[in-house]
Amino acid sequence: MTYTDKETRISFGIHDLRAVADERRFIVLGKSILEALKSRFDADFAALIECDSTVTSDVSGLKTLFKKGSIPNDFDAQVTRIFLSNEGSSKGADSTRERIQSNHGYLFKVLAVSDTAEVCFLIGNSGGSPFEIENRVDFEASIERVFAEISDAYIISQQANKIEVLMNQLEKVEGHLVGSDSNSDSEVTLSELDSRVESISGVKTYSEKMKTVLNQIAKVGPSSLSLLLKGETGTGKSYIARKIHEHNATETSSFEMVSCGSLTPSLVEGEIFGWRKGAFSGAEEDRQGLFERAHGGTVFLDEVSELPMEVQQKLLRVIQEGVVRPVGSSELIPVDCRLIASSCRDLSEAVRQGEFREDLYYRLAGFQLEIPSLRERSEDIKLIIAEFLQELRVEHGFSKQFSESAALELKSYSWPGNIQQLKNVVQQSYLISEKRMIARKVLHSVLNDSPADALVGEKFEVSPEEITIRIPRIGGFNEIISEVERAVILAALRQNRGNKSRVTKQLKIPRQTLYNKLERFGFTDEELRS
Image (cartoon, rainbow, N blue to C red; front, side, top):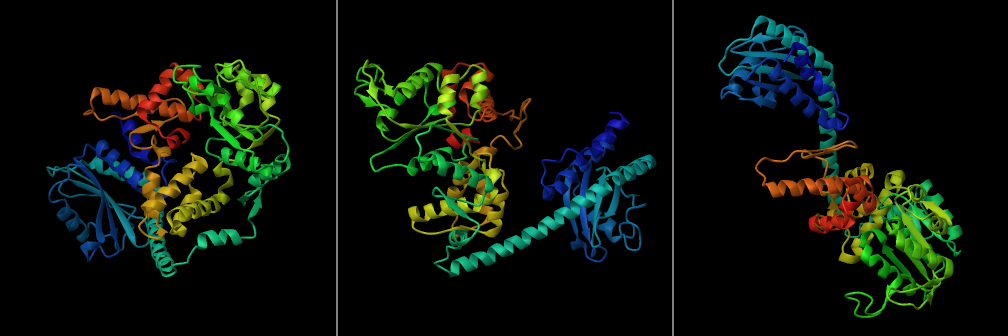
């Protein structure tokens, strides 16, 4: 390794840390620098030590934060001796200057990172062999280069720790308050009394984007116009479709929906148009299709972009002529339904690619609504949580609420799975919390297990260009191959927002093969939506 390469390794921990939270940066940066120093100077071990203002008289002020390499048995004693001697003391000296000593195979440098605290980078040789003079100069120069970054990271980490302590104390107070008031439902009542919240078409919102959508629904709801709902998976398109139906529903009109992407090609036609007894193997009796069941009401086709081309043609005939022909029958049955469709995919782009019929697209898109994602209406998160908690209270008979700090984390989370993922997290947190106030640590345990983050961690790294997978060598061959298959398919599903047609094209596998894999791996709906 060249000198330049070694210097690059020493400083690499300072860069490319965008994905690391501020309070974690000191940990990542410190460990990275230790690893680089150990390699750069061919040392047997390296350590980062924290020392407060009492270190010259009280060894309890010393704390070894991180260690790398083969640490000798007498390490703590050696460090204590160094810091209790004049060599290690920074009193009356500028700790950012000449603070390097060679003691029994050690090189160390103390940095004053705040008015009351110092950190010490230390490297050493287990055999006690001293370092060369030039090593000392290089060591100091290396530490000086990272001084500003390590100081900033340390201060941020200390502030984050103080905030953590305060938030824990606040949670304890909140817990006592909630426990002392058996009728406390403030999380729900506060949101209901807030003058900024508006209820439009039965949906409460603070969000201006959502208010615009709901106002449009209020205008087109009473009409028979076909609607196309657009937006990411999990934004609540089926919920909105039901609200539109309720705008002009009668006691006898029904709301029927089908998820086009969840059905195999062999089942989708029968589910939508129905079938007659004996039409195919397993058809032991007549079955009404979606349009027959919804006659006089509303049909909602979720993820309509997933419909096979031959079914698209038959759907177009139903819309144009108002009749449906069940599978295995020549009979034409009149139907009168309002049609609402949804797609997380741009249907106009699907038309350009020849994957969706243009005439059907214009029939479905009589009026289009773009449903905003949860991150675009983050001000509604606490309101949505309150509604979920109210539903859980009705179902289970007792109320719970999130602590203020937990609620803040819920609001700041990115929610790649949108409202459905939020609902799952709220439900799980509610069920596993042993107290009426759901603490942050409970929330963290749920978020850490969230399927939406399954490919984000130490084993998987996913980028638009590649998937990097680290697999233990002890795993069996079949288990390794299975894990790779699962990761690739799940990553493709997420990249294509759950569009299985696009996944099959991207991975160059038959559609039935994909369905077989999905059944084998047992992906949950939340995983596929994330």
